[in-house]
Length: 334
Ligand SMILES: [Zn+2]
Ligand SMILES: [Zn+2]
Image (cartoon, rainbow, N blue to C red; front, top):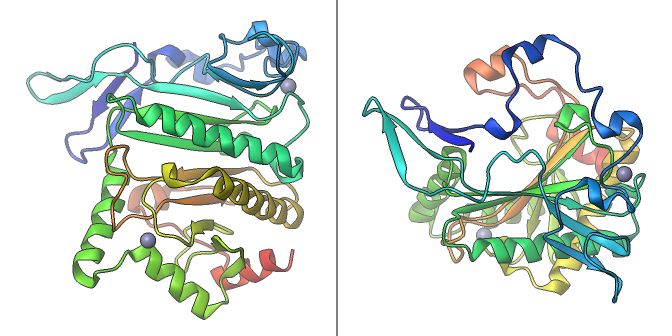
Protein backbone atom coordinates (compact mmCIF):
# COMPACT_ATOMS: atom_id res chain seq x y z
CA UNK A 1 0.00 0.00 0.00
CA UNK A 2 1.50 3.38 -0.99
CA UNK A 3 1.47 6.13 1.62
CA UNK A 4 0.72 9.84 1.47
CA UNK A 5 2.97 11.84 3.81
CA UNK A 6 2.76 15.53 4.63
CA UNK A 7 5.78 17.76 5.10
CA UNK A 8 4.96 19.61 8.37
CA UNK A 9 7.03 22.63 7.32
CA UNK A 10 5.44 23.23 3.92
CA UNK A 11 2.14 21.33 4.25
CA UNK A 12 2.98 19.65 0.95
CA UNK A 13 1.92 16.04 0.45
CA UNK A 14 4.21 13.42 -1.08
CA UNK A 15 3.33 9.94 -2.35
CA UNK A 16 5.69 7.30 -1.01
CA UNK A 17 5.14 4.89 -3.88
CA UNK A 18 5.65 1.45 -2.42
CA UNK A 19 4.10 -0.24 -5.51
CA UNK A 20 6.84 1.17 -7.69
CA UNK A 21 9.44 1.13 -4.94
CA UNK A 22 13.02 0.74 -5.95
CA UNK A 23 15.85 -0.27 -3.68
CA UNK A 24 18.27 2.60 -3.10
CA UNK A 25 20.91 0.56 -4.97
CA UNK A 26 18.70 0.53 -8.12
CA UNK A 27 19.54 4.17 -8.71
CA UNK A 28 23.20 3.32 -9.18
CA UNK A 29 22.78 0.34 -11.56
CA UNK A 30 21.52 0.29 -15.19
CA UNK A 31 18.68 -2.33 -14.89
CA UNK A 32 15.34 -2.28 -16.84
CA UNK A 33 16.53 -4.86 -19.42
CA UNK A 34 13.72 -7.20 -18.35
CA UNK A 35 10.97 -4.74 -19.36
CA UNK A 36 8.79 -6.16 -22.19
CA UNK A 37 9.42 -2.99 -24.23
CA UNK A 38 13.14 -3.61 -24.16
CA UNK A 39 12.46 -6.99 -25.79
CA UNK A 40 10.46 -5.28 -28.54
CA UNK A 41 7.04 -6.18 -27.08
CA UNK A 42 4.74 -3.28 -26.33
CA UNK A 43 1.98 -4.06 -23.80
CA UNK A 44 -0.14 -1.19 -25.17
CA UNK A 45 -0.22 -2.48 -28.78
CA UNK A 46 -3.36 -4.18 -30.13
CA UNK A 47 -3.03 -7.96 -29.68
CA UNK A 48 -1.03 -7.67 -26.42
CA UNK A 49 -4.05 -7.03 -24.17
CA UNK A 50 -3.06 -9.92 -21.89
CA UNK A 51 0.15 -8.06 -20.91
CA UNK A 52 -1.81 -5.34 -19.09
CA UNK A 53 -4.24 -5.44 -16.14
CA UNK A 54 -7.88 -6.00 -17.32
CA UNK A 55 -9.44 -2.95 -18.96
CA UNK A 56 -11.65 -0.50 -17.05
CA UNK A 57 -13.26 0.82 -20.21
CA UNK A 58 -12.66 0.55 -23.93
CA UNK A 59 -14.20 2.10 -27.03
CA UNK A 60 -14.40 -0.97 -29.21
CA UNK A 61 -16.15 -2.44 -32.26
CA UNK A 62 -19.56 -3.87 -31.39
CA UNK A 63 -19.36 -7.58 -30.60
CA UNK A 64 -15.65 -7.70 -29.68
CA UNK A 65 -14.86 -8.98 -26.17
CA UNK A 66 -13.10 -7.01 -23.40
CA UNK A 67 -9.31 -7.47 -23.30
CA UNK A 68 -9.14 -8.63 -26.93
CA UNK A 69 -8.38 -6.66 -30.14
CA UNK A 70 -11.08 -4.48 -31.73
CA UNK A 71 -10.70 -1.31 -29.64
CA UNK A 72 -9.65 2.21 -30.59
CA UNK A 73 -9.32 3.64 -27.04
CA UNK A 74 -8.47 1.43 -24.05
CA UNK A 75 -8.31 2.45 -20.38
CA UNK A 76 -6.49 0.22 -17.90
CA UNK A 77 -5.28 0.50 -14.30
CA UNK A 78 -1.62 1.54 -14.16
CA UNK A 79 0.43 -1.61 -13.59
CA UNK A 80 2.74 0.33 -11.24
CA UNK A 81 0.25 2.72 -9.62
CA UNK A 82 1.31 5.74 -7.59
CA UNK A 83 -1.93 5.27 -5.59
CA UNK A 84 -4.25 2.24 -5.20
CA UNK A 85 -8.07 2.06 -4.95
CA UNK A 86 -8.02 0.25 -1.55
CA UNK A 87 -7.40 1.77 1.88
CA UNK A 88 -9.12 4.58 3.72
CA UNK A 89 -8.94 8.35 3.83
CA UNK A 90 -8.27 8.71 7.57
CA UNK A 91 -5.23 10.81 8.47
CA UNK A 92 -2.82 9.33 11.06
CA UNK A 93 0.22 10.69 12.88
CA UNK A 94 3.68 9.29 13.60
CA UNK A 95 5.14 10.50 16.95
CA UNK A 96 1.84 12.39 17.26
CA UNK A 97 3.32 14.84 14.72
CA UNK A 98 4.16 13.58 11.22
CA UNK A 99 0.90 13.32 9.29
CA UNK A 100 0.28 10.45 6.85
CA UNK A 101 -2.52 8.43 5.32
CA UNK A 102 -3.06 5.40 3.08
CA UNK A 103 -1.97 5.97 -0.49
CA UNK A 104 -5.56 5.54 -1.63
CA UNK A 105 -6.57 6.75 -5.07
CA UNK A 106 -6.99 5.70 -8.67
CA UNK A 107 -4.23 5.66 -11.28
CA UNK A 108 -5.31 4.85 -14.84
CA UNK A 109 -3.64 4.79 -18.23
CA UNK A 110 -5.53 5.91 -21.32
CA UNK A 111 -4.11 4.16 -24.37
CA UNK A 112 -4.79 6.68 -27.11
CA UNK A 113 -4.54 4.39 -30.14
CA UNK A 114 -4.15 0.67 -30.91
CA UNK A 115 -1.18 1.70 -33.10
CA UNK A 116 2.28 2.20 -31.64
CA UNK A 117 3.53 5.00 -33.86
CA UNK A 118 0.59 7.40 -33.69
CA UNK A 119 0.94 10.42 -31.54
CA UNK A 120 -1.31 13.31 -30.79
CA UNK A 121 0.18 16.05 -33.02
CA UNK A 122 -0.07 13.80 -36.11
CA UNK A 123 -3.06 11.61 -35.20
CA UNK A 124 -6.29 11.83 -37.16
CA UNK A 125 -8.62 14.51 -35.81
CA UNK A 126 -11.36 11.91 -35.11
CA UNK A 127 -8.99 9.83 -32.95
CA UNK A 128 -7.91 12.88 -30.88
CA UNK A 129 -11.62 13.61 -30.31
CA UNK A 130 -12.08 10.07 -28.99
CA UNK A 131 -9.13 10.58 -26.59
CA UNK A 132 -10.65 13.77 -25.18
CA UNK A 133 -14.11 12.18 -24.95
CA UNK A 134 -12.45 9.37 -22.93
CA UNK A 135 -10.83 12.00 -20.63
CA UNK A 136 -14.25 13.54 -20.10
CA UNK A 137 -15.92 10.20 -19.40
CA UNK A 138 -13.29 9.14 -16.82
CA UNK A 139 -13.31 12.61 -15.23
CA UNK A 140 -17.09 12.49 -14.73
CA UNK A 141 -17.06 8.91 -13.39
CA UNK A 142 -14.16 9.39 -10.96
CA UNK A 143 -15.41 12.74 -9.67
CA UNK A 144 -18.59 11.01 -8.46
CA UNK A 145 -16.55 8.85 -6.06
CA UNK A 146 -16.90 10.59 -2.66
CA UNK A 147 -13.38 9.50 -1.63
CA UNK A 148 -11.71 11.63 -4.31
CA UNK A 149 -11.02 15.35 -4.04
CA UNK A 150 -9.03 16.02 -7.18
CA UNK A 151 -8.85 14.42 -10.65
CA UNK A 152 -5.66 15.19 -12.58
CA UNK A 153 -5.45 14.26 -16.27
CA UNK A 154 -2.00 14.61 -17.80
CA UNK A 155 0.29 13.46 -20.53
CA UNK A 156 4.03 12.80 -20.50
CA UNK A 157 5.65 12.62 -23.92
CA UNK A 158 9.32 11.62 -24.06
CA UNK A 159 11.98 10.69 -21.53
CA UNK A 160 12.63 14.18 -20.15
CA UNK A 161 8.85 14.57 -19.63
CA UNK A 162 8.81 11.42 -17.51
CA UNK A 163 7.99 8.47 -19.75
CA UNK A 164 10.02 5.88 -21.61
CA UNK A 165 6.90 4.24 -23.12
CA UNK A 166 6.59 5.38 -26.74
CA UNK A 167 3.07 4.07 -27.37
CA UNK A 168 0.73 7.10 -27.17
CA UNK A 169 -0.91 7.25 -23.76
CA UNK A 170 -2.05 9.67 -21.07
CA UNK A 171 -2.85 9.19 -17.40
CA UNK A 172 -5.53 10.02 -14.87
CA UNK A 173 -4.85 10.16 -11.13
CA UNK A 174 -7.64 10.67 -8.60
CA UNK A 175 -6.37 11.78 -5.17
CA UNK A 176 -8.11 11.95 -1.76
CA UNK A 177 -6.39 15.30 -1.04
CA UNK A 178 -6.14 18.71 -2.70
CA UNK A 179 -2.40 19.47 -2.72
CA UNK A 180 -0.94 22.87 -1.71
CA UNK A 181 0.07 23.58 -5.31
CA UNK A 182 -3.62 23.56 -6.29
CA UNK A 183 -4.86 25.04 -3.00
CA UNK A 184 -2.54 28.05 -3.54
CA UNK A 185 -3.89 28.62 -7.04
CA UNK A 186 -7.46 28.41 -5.76
CA UNK A 187 -6.76 30.81 -2.89
CA UNK A 188 -5.02 33.38 -5.12
CA UNK A 189 -7.94 33.21 -7.54
CA UNK A 190 -10.39 33.62 -4.65
CA UNK A 191 -8.51 36.69 -3.34
CA UNK A 192 -8.57 38.26 -6.82
CA UNK A 193 -12.31 37.62 -7.01
CA UNK A 194 -12.85 39.19 -3.58
CA UNK A 195 -10.94 42.31 -4.61
CA UNK A 196 -12.25 42.69 -8.15
CA UNK A 197 -15.49 40.74 -8.43
CA UNK A 198 -14.17 38.91 -11.50
CA UNK A 199 -12.48 35.59 -12.29
CA UNK A 200 -8.75 36.26 -12.75
CA UNK A 201 -8.56 33.82 -15.66
CA UNK A 202 -11.44 35.57 -17.46
CA UNK A 203 -9.56 38.86 -17.02
CA UNK A 204 -6.25 37.35 -18.21
CA UNK A 205 -8.04 36.10 -21.33
CA UNK A 206 -9.64 39.50 -22.03
CA UNK A 207 -6.30 41.28 -21.59
CA UNK A 208 -4.38 38.78 -23.71
CA UNK A 209 -6.97 39.07 -26.51
CA UNK A 210 -6.66 42.86 -26.35
CA UNK A 211 -2.82 42.84 -26.31
CA UNK A 212 -2.69 40.16 -29.08
CA UNK A 213 1.10 39.62 -29.09
CA UNK A 214 1.06 36.49 -26.95
CA UNK A 215 -1.95 34.89 -28.67
CA UNK A 216 -1.12 31.81 -30.76
CA UNK A 217 -4.66 31.34 -32.11
CA UNK A 218 -8.28 31.26 -31.05
CA UNK A 219 -11.48 29.43 -32.03
CA UNK A 220 -15.12 30.13 -31.15
CA UNK A 221 -14.72 28.53 -27.72
CA UNK A 222 -10.99 28.53 -26.86
CA UNK A 223 -7.96 30.85 -26.69
CA UNK A 224 -4.39 29.54 -26.95
CA UNK A 225 -1.57 31.79 -25.74
CA UNK A 226 1.82 32.02 -24.09
CA UNK A 227 1.23 33.54 -20.64
CA UNK A 228 2.73 36.96 -19.73
CA UNK A 229 4.98 35.36 -17.07
CA UNK A 230 5.59 31.97 -18.73
CA UNK A 231 7.90 30.04 -16.43
CA UNK A 232 9.61 28.04 -19.18
CA UNK A 233 10.23 28.44 -22.94
CA UNK A 234 7.08 27.93 -25.05
CA UNK A 235 4.82 27.28 -22.04
CA UNK A 236 1.33 27.44 -23.57
CA UNK A 237 -2.13 27.77 -22.04
CA UNK A 238 -5.45 26.70 -23.50
CA UNK A 239 -8.38 28.50 -21.90
CA UNK A 240 -12.09 27.93 -22.62
CA UNK A 241 -13.77 31.29 -23.39
CA UNK A 242 -16.87 30.43 -21.38
CA UNK A 243 -16.26 30.62 -17.63
CA UNK A 244 -16.39 27.24 -15.89
CA UNK A 245 -14.38 25.96 -12.93
CA UNK A 246 -14.54 22.29 -13.82
CA UNK A 247 -13.48 20.27 -16.85
CA UNK A 248 -16.68 18.35 -16.12
CA UNK A 249 -18.66 21.24 -17.62
CA UNK A 250 -17.45 20.49 -21.17
CA UNK A 251 -20.18 19.14 -23.46
CA UNK A 252 -19.27 16.44 -26.02
CA UNK A 253 -19.37 19.08 -28.80
CA UNK A 254 -17.14 21.41 -26.80
CA UNK A 255 -14.78 18.47 -26.13
CA UNK A 256 -14.41 17.82 -29.87
CA UNK A 257 -13.45 21.45 -30.44
CA UNK A 258 -10.95 21.15 -27.57
CA UNK A 259 -9.45 18.10 -29.32
CA UNK A 260 -8.99 20.20 -32.49
CA UNK A 261 -7.40 23.02 -30.47
CA UNK A 262 -5.00 20.66 -28.68
CA UNK A 263 -4.03 18.79 -31.84
CA UNK A 264 -3.37 22.09 -33.65
CA UNK A 265 -1.31 23.49 -30.75
CA UNK A 266 0.73 20.30 -30.28
CA UNK A 267 1.29 20.11 -34.03
CA UNK A 268 2.73 23.66 -34.04
CA UNK A 269 5.08 22.66 -31.20
CA UNK A 270 5.94 19.37 -32.94
CA UNK A 271 6.80 21.06 -36.25
CA UNK A 272 8.57 24.16 -35.03
CA UNK A 273 10.57 22.54 -32.21
CA UNK A 274 11.07 19.16 -33.93
CA UNK A 275 9.07 16.82 -31.70
CA UNK A 276 10.25 17.97 -28.28
CA UNK A 277 9.38 16.07 -25.10
CA UNK A 278 6.42 17.75 -23.42
CA UNK A 279 3.85 17.51 -20.64
CA UNK A 280 0.31 18.77 -20.55
CA UNK A 281 -2.03 18.93 -17.59
CA UNK A 282 -5.75 19.65 -17.37
CA UNK A 283 -6.24 21.92 -14.34
CA UNK A 284 -9.76 21.68 -12.96
CA UNK A 285 -11.33 22.68 -9.64
CA UNK A 286 -11.61 20.00 -6.92
CA UNK A 287 -14.52 17.56 -7.50
CA UNK A 288 -16.82 19.06 -4.92
CA UNK A 289 -16.07 22.67 -5.87
CA UNK A 290 -17.20 22.48 -9.46
CA UNK A 291 -19.26 25.69 -9.62
CA UNK A 292 -16.67 28.18 -8.34
CA UNK A 293 -17.06 31.70 -9.73
CA UNK A 294 -13.38 32.44 -9.17
CA UNK A 295 -11.64 29.43 -10.75
CA UNK A 296 -11.48 28.58 -14.46
CA UNK A 297 -10.41 25.20 -15.83
CA UNK A 298 -7.54 25.27 -18.33
CA UNK A 299 -4.75 23.24 -19.90
CA UNK A 300 -1.06 23.99 -19.47
CA UNK A 301 1.41 22.60 -22.03
CA UNK A 302 5.12 22.58 -21.14
CA UNK A 303 7.61 21.61 -23.85
CA UNK A 304 10.63 20.15 -22.03
CA UNK A 305 13.30 22.15 -23.81
CA UNK A 306 15.08 23.49 -20.72
CA UNK A 307 16.23 21.64 -17.59
CA UNK A 308 15.19 22.69 -14.10
CA UNK A 309 18.35 23.41 -12.08
CA UNK A 310 19.41 24.19 -8.52
CA UNK A 311 18.30 27.82 -8.48
CA UNK A 312 14.74 26.89 -9.52
CA UNK A 313 14.71 24.10 -6.94
CA UNK A 314 16.00 26.35 -4.17
CA UNK A 315 14.17 29.57 -4.88
CA UNK A 316 11.09 28.40 -6.76
CA UNK A 317 11.90 31.14 -9.29
CA UNK A 318 12.10 29.85 -12.84
CA UNK A 319 14.44 31.34 -15.40
CA UNK A 320 12.85 31.49 -18.85
CA UNK A 321 15.32 32.23 -21.63
CA UNK A 322 12.69 32.80 -24.35
CA UNK A 323 10.66 36.02 -24.29
CA UNK A 324 6.95 35.01 -24.15
CA UNK A 325 6.03 37.42 -27.01
CA UNK A 326 8.72 35.82 -29.24
CA UNK A 327 7.63 32.30 -28.29
CA UNK A 328 4.01 33.16 -29.22
CA UNK A 329 5.04 34.71 -32.55
CA UNK A 330 7.16 31.64 -33.35
CA UNK A 331 4.29 29.23 -32.60
CA UNK A 332 1.67 31.44 -34.24
CA UNK A 333 3.62 31.40 -37.50
CA UNK A 334 4.44 27.66 -37.34
ZN1 LIG B 1 2.74 -0.18 -28.75
ZN1 LIG C 1 -13.31 32.61 -15.59
